[in-house]
Amino acid sequence: MPELSAITGAFGDALTLHSISVILGGVLLGYLVGVIPGLNRSVAIAIAIPLTFYMSAYAAIAFLIGLSKGTAAGSAVSAILLNTPGEPSSAATCLDGYPMAKNGQPRKALKVGLLASVIGDLLATLLLIVVVIPFASIALKFGPYELAAILIFALVFIAGMAGGSFLKGMAAGGMGVILGTVGLDPETGAMRFTFGFAELMEGVPILPLVIGTLALSEMFVQLDEYRRVKGGSSVRLGNDPNDDLSYKEFKSTLPTIFKSTGVGAFVGALPGLGPSVGSFMAYGLAKRGAKDPDSYGKGNPNGIAAAEAADNAVIPASYIPLFGLGIPGSVSAALLVGAFMIHGIQVGPLMLRDHPQMLFTIFAGMVVASLLMLAVGWYGLRIFAKVTNVPQNIVIPVVIFFCLAGIQVQGYGTFGLLTVFGFAIFGYFLKKHDYSFVTFLVAFIVTPMLEMNLRQAVILSGGEISILLQRPIALFFVVATGLMVLHLLWSSFRRHQLRRRSMAS
Image 1 (cartoon, one colour):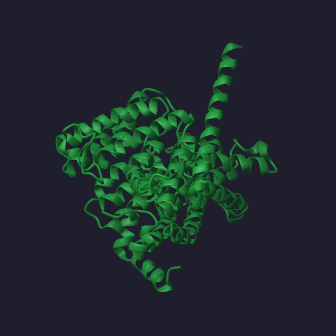
Image 2 (cartoon, rainbow, N blue to C red; image 1 turned 90 degrees about the vertical axis):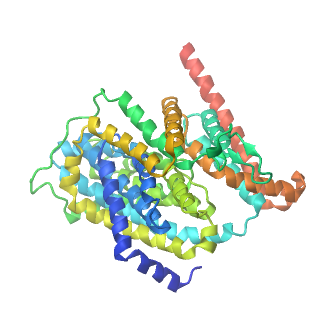
Image 3 (cartoon, helix red, strand yellow; image 1 turned 90 degrees about the horizontal axis):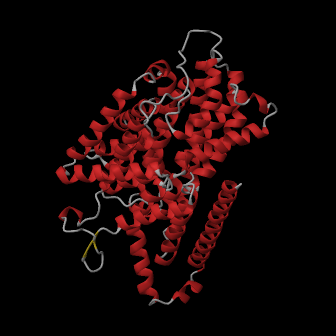
């Protein structure tokens, strides 16, 4: 366990004026992105990564984490006032948030959502700090056998859980693995899949891939849907004295907030499920356990509290497998890995050994970000409400400009522009045909680590699979992977049979 002096020193570093300014900038930008329909957390982080290139490693990660947290909280504003979630995970917030706003209580609905977001985020952040340090200490004792088996299991698990089709998830993961092997062979130095491009000798550049597949492709999708009318009319904030949240009303939502935070933290700790699953699961459980379930969907503040607490709890909890094992369990976690890579840091259990002070400072910065979320959301309520009216014909060109500018600023040149447009088209078809983005990105990022550990395991064992009998942890994950593949294939086959029967009837 870390020494108390290291933890107090980390909080001292996180509370400096520079650190607070960086985190505050991330939270503010996240709120702005969150309240604008059509933008989301992944797009914001992808565009912001180039901005962090000249920051220190800690400042870059703190800024991106603040951005991620602010986006999750800000997306509730557009969900409540416009019935259009800034994030897909805020769709559950629309169910009670918009009816409550239409009933003349928009400020009350926004404050319930904000407080639930902050409490869910803060509690999940504290859980991350408590769990991940002993988790990483155990992971440091794993050898190549265990790590290779865990990584393969994680990829199969994410492929099965992150999308609607297991086969599509595996296909997306396969594409990520192929792209992850581009470059020089780590053992022989031979060039693989470079096709004569010297720019690919060090592998596919992560920044053009991330910006293209996430940000620019999303703008292509938004252009497709630009002429469609979404949601309902905007609700304006008034000055009605009755439209304010009393302590008694807030206190009545606390049991729902605590339960939903637990649901969100559980979902976030499982790689691939994502905040949408957490928010809808928490909303469903809250409605099922309520004394007045019929009031849900008509403006019940507990519905907002359940969705927002779970949604925001998922984000810190998704960093448990990231910092504990080096496995990103969500798109935003995968993007953080990219930011760490840019600054030359290998994220995972090795951080506890090689960069303990930075790890603890990041945790302290996450707590600071949670508190800044409350201040920014509370005092910026009216300003963020007005941002929801920014039209898409302004948002889309601005985002495209920042996507291309980010590539040019990093010096990728013409090759970078061609790469980002290629991945934008690739990402567009992934979105249109419902292939899992999480599986693709995670597979691309963990492939070098998986290849290294798999090769080491084969060399050490001499190609004898019987060595697994002496490695119970590795054997467990190999067997679990096989059983999961069989279960997911059988489930896919059953769904296909049911569809065929329904079409025939």
